[in-house]
Length: 113
Image 1: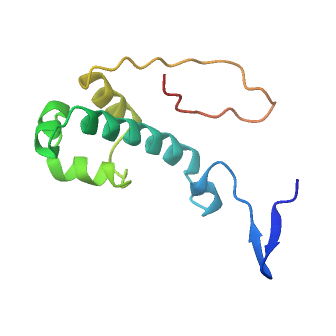
Image 2 (image 1 turned 90 degrees about the vertical axis):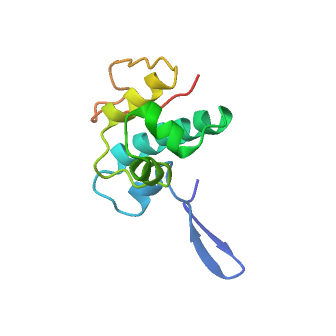
């Protein structure tokens, strides 16, 4: 399948599954994982009708840091901290390690159950 389509005379390139990679970020895979974790944290906070202040207290982080994380600013927040946040919100997090399907380097994915 072609990655480029012409629509109304404009060439449109189809992106990958990782917008961070498409934009050329060096840590694109890590950013995609963090985006998935942050999204889930935000959904839990919303479903429990928590204010950001109350959620920040539960998660053990300052409210401005939580706000930034939920807006996609992950610098300074590790995947481990995000997993801890999910645990504090009553979620189990399973880490599964398996052989990569290709000979290339493996990848990390966030799968929500």
